[in-house]
Image 1 (tube, rainbow, N blue to C red):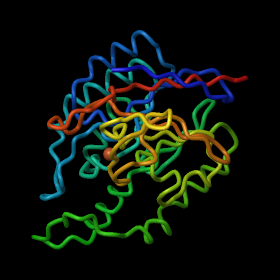
Image 2 (tube, rainbow, N blue to C red):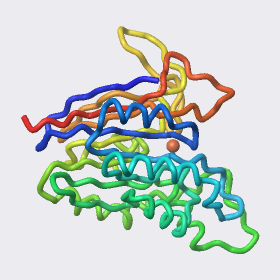
Image 3 (cartoon, rainbow, N blue to C red):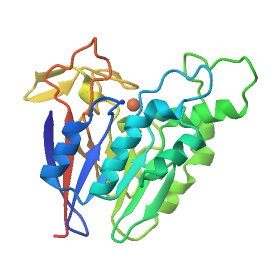
Image 4 (cartoon, rainbow, N blue to C red):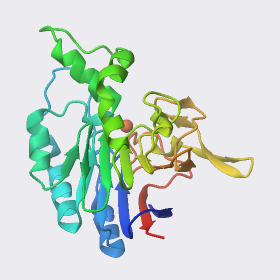
Length: 271
Ligand SMILES: [Fe+2]
């Protein structure tokens, strides 16, 4: 387990904790880290849940009761903003209501203006695709194992709010579970005027190896072998993306190699 610190020039002085990919695994070490580091704000960029493939279109909220406890603990530490990953695909409006009742702000393809920052949450396109499937669901129909492709549809109607957020004055942070949405996949976030994009999902590439004086990830979901975006800071035209390597090992039978679990701290500095 590792605490990684980044410094980013912003408009305010603030310590931000970034949590990603907990997948319903133990979280005491995260709370201990919060006690030591005292973040001013906690941002969660998805996959707190360990979602199954959608088969019966329901999710029992009590299955995530300990995640609700975790969120309550986070919410008494600092303001919390939570954006949804692919594993949050099955969460129903009722589940989201229970999550909001913990005191956490859920950003489901939405942005908010806080006292000194603008914070948005881009929901995983896999949840958007599933929601679209569910809206046209016929009884007995099972969700296909391969995600149906509705990317074009999503680009046209679901990313308008990103443009609205981009036009706001102030330091803009976007939570985007998928780091490949930076440059490899719509909505190509590096083309937007966001100061900071925060991502997870790639779990650091599961195995990390050293080549050409740098560490690289071996495999990333939705990027395949030798993925480009698995951790660290990536600078673009307008801002940067920071990727968390995640807070759990999702596949316990496959070890993480040279790839410790990670809490990211971002020191925003006014100067
Ligand atoms: Fe994910």
